[in-house]
Image 1 (tube, one colour):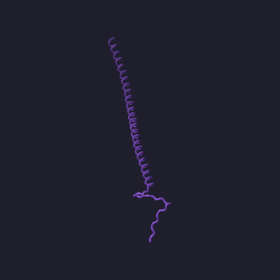
Image 2 (cartoon, one colour):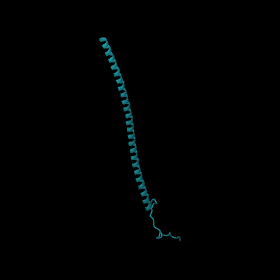
Image 3 (tube, helix red, strand yellow):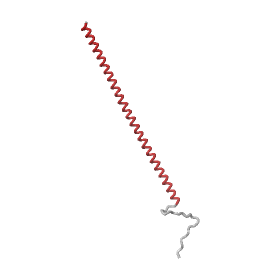
Image 4 (cartoon, helix red, strand yellow):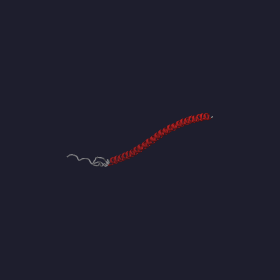
Length: 112
């Protein structure tokens, strides 16, 4: 008669396996790894989103700074243009005054 399979000895532990072949400790370890991975991916997503928000804000600040710099340059150019107009107008005024003075002198000569 064939020998019956040997029963597990009391010194070797009996490990129960689920239907997918995993024992309880392995399943618990896989669940922990999955939980840690999920938490990591969630945090990574949050940090990536925060980074993108900060980059967008930085770009806005740089654009505003650039626009401010451009506006400052435009105002500086406008100021220089107005100063040149004032110098030109002042010169015209001086010429006008000279012409009026010359006309007054001519009138005085005519009157005399």
